[in-house]
Length: 495
Image 1: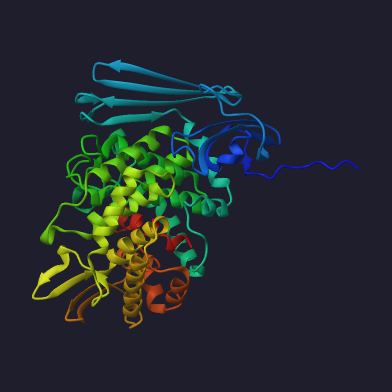
Image 2: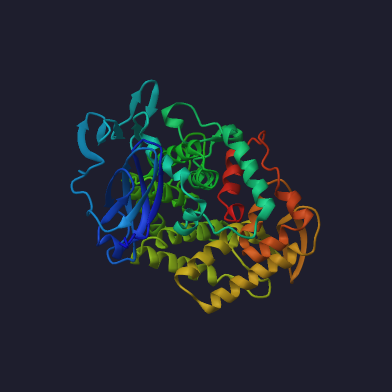
């Protein structure tokens, strides 16, 4: 009898007959052995320009061409492709100076004869193209027909793989309630209307005639929908939204993005309105070098612009949002400069903990006469998750204790019952009053983001909690894109 040793599969990839190209994290030690393919087809790979040498896990571009069926990527085989040349495709990169900008072009010539093209034109002067005016500092990225479908294989991968990768949280704590919430999100996806034209593609409108500028990280929300629902159309939306952030909303001078306004570039630039998670994860999973470079630029912008507001202009979001975005990148790629910026933000937040109120106090909440206005939906939905992500990288016993106390304070408030979920209240001398509760709003849903699976499971058993979060937002909501994003990006929705 002959015993044949079968190498354990690093990835199991379902093919539909078209070449695929996507990103995946693999152990660095395994990559030293090269990669091989079990099954019919050919494999090509290269490390993505992300991460640091010496890290345990390396993100790589995986390209496979083969007939319909299932193949397995295994240790041992060929090394990384050199100069973009391999058995699956040949990559060609070109640059050209134009009177109004700089053109970058990438071609992928696949073994089956298909050709993908990506063109990015960075404008160095105001330019009108087909009736649309592009400003200096904007860019226009276009892809050939069919180029986006290379990464559709992601929507055929098992849900558990995305848990392991980290783009979705592990299942648990949600049950039938979160299943219903996800189902409702699926019905809303076709209702989201992208803005018209090439300048509008990948972005959405909200009430008052203003542009969202992908508020609350629309690319990340759409990416989670794509992977959690196995929806290739949502994946294409996520990619367009991520590209839009860098082409339209990004300010190269500050490294931040313009906030929502009448036009994509009409608002101010603020660290509290700059999100990189969607750009980062979309870039990693679709093996898009441009998005990965953009995510790093956004991170550097956040690191270089610490909060400066004082008094009533000292805002929670300007501390918590940048911390959470920096920690998202640091969880995947160590960087001492970004880590120092994140540590300083976390320390600034920690100093604002009030043990008597069991919350973090910011100037915007100091309304006078010893009264503090607690925005619980921001504390629960943004600040506490940011601190937990920081603690996962850099443990601090005292900070962890305070986070637990603040979380328990929220639980105690929810435990008092009542219709809806408490999103705001006022505190004076440890006495709570003027509590505001909401139902069918994303702010109400954000309150649940503070809780771990066991507490979440208990909360979702309550009819008042279920009633506050199911069936929302309405398709007729004038701020549908914002409400959708704030809900779909939440961890608890995907548990």
